[in-house]
Length: 201
Image 1 (cartoon, rainbow, N blue to C red):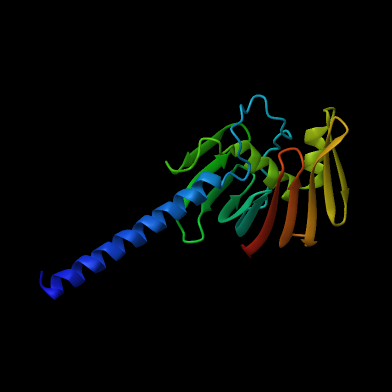
Image 2 (spheres, rainbow, N blue to C red; image 1 turned 60 degrees about the vertical axis):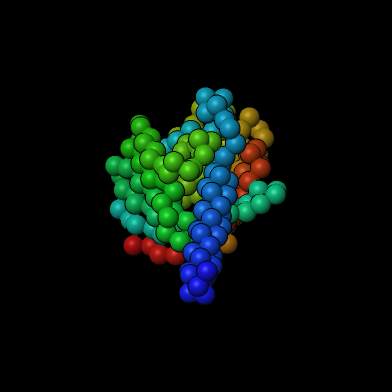
């Protein structure tokens, strides 16, 4: 076989190997990117009641790192919020779309990548977002006369269900408009989120 043809075969094999590694890495990320993901029957999951969308209108880009006892994953989230709806797009750090989610206060619509596991639960995404960023008055009103209780101070929010602490929010860089660095710990489902705001408009 001519030397030139051998070089072509080597180059092609290297490209195929690189593509296979990239596909494997992406599949691994997608299979574990459920911030929020175990195979749940959502009807049986214990979730903070979802509050309605709130204003003002804003667009926020965030980097979210999700940590479990055995692994961690990072993704980008683009949020568009106003009084009518919550819109969220999740992407890998390379810009590959993972999901698009909207919530109008009544109905959740989730459009996700075929590679994303069925265990991704949009209700978890929304309740985590609201627990961290929604006005306390809105959350308190939404939880009134329920088994849920919210305790708040200047740097923390603590959520209780039937007297047991289920989640805690730590504001690492508090801000009256939108906290720039936040940690959320979900004790009930054993995960932790590190949320860093990249841009706020």
